[in-house]
Image 1 (tube, rainbow, N blue to C red):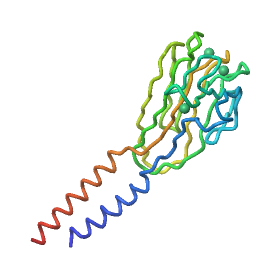
Image 2 (cartoon, helix red, strand yellow):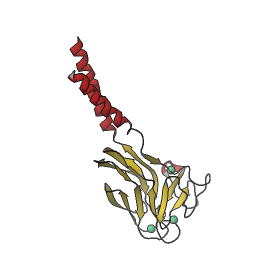
Image 3 (spheres, rainbow, N blue to C red):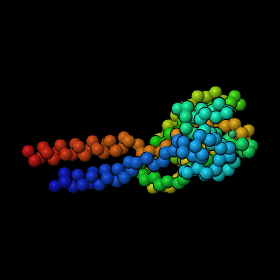
Image 4 (cartoon, helix red, strand yellow):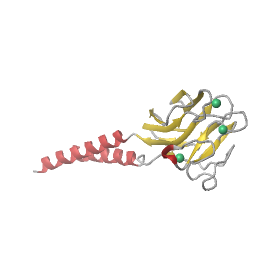
Amino acid sequence: MMYKRLATIVTATLFAASANAGVIFQDNFDAEGSSGASALNYNSFDNWTVEQGTVDLIADPNQWGIDCVGGTGKCVDLDGSTGNAGTLQSIAFTLDPGTYTLSFDISGNQRGSSDDTMLVTLGGFLSESFTLAATAPWQTIVRDITVSTQTTDSIIFNHDGGDNIGIILDNVSLVPEPGTLALLGLGLLGLGGARRRMKS
Ligand SMILES: [Ca+2]
Ligand SMILES: [Ca+2]
Ligand SMILES: [Ca+2]
């Protein structure tokens, strides 16, 4: 009896967790704007608004020699072309309690200009400043956040200054930590084994 009740609880927990299993947020910017075209001071993003200043949509290849991740598709210059770097804010999403992994790709400005700095925030869970030299290669930044009570937040990239040459951003994603689900699944398997042993 106890096992049956436990199994129900574990199943219910697993079900709640699997409702969480999908990607919360993902954007590679490749579908933005006109096919193959860059757009200065772009503000028609599917999943983002530019709250302050401006950003540029960069298509690879382009006349500035900027490479997006993989040398194709599109990416974003977080300092647009108006002398006021952008604040790029994602659509809001609801996070249930659990652990999530935020990742994004950034490179230096790729145009030989001075170092650039930006602040990345995600609600009260993350507030981190990044300074990149012009030549800094593409790198993937990965940060885990733990949510204890349900919250609605967005991801914000806030670039400093405004000389029209900024950090390049690509491939932003927020996904639930897979370890949580795997552990629950293992627990359920273990329980099944215990029940089989009881029966035999
Ligand atoms: Ca891209
Ligand atoms: Ca720019
Ligand atoms: Ca700059």
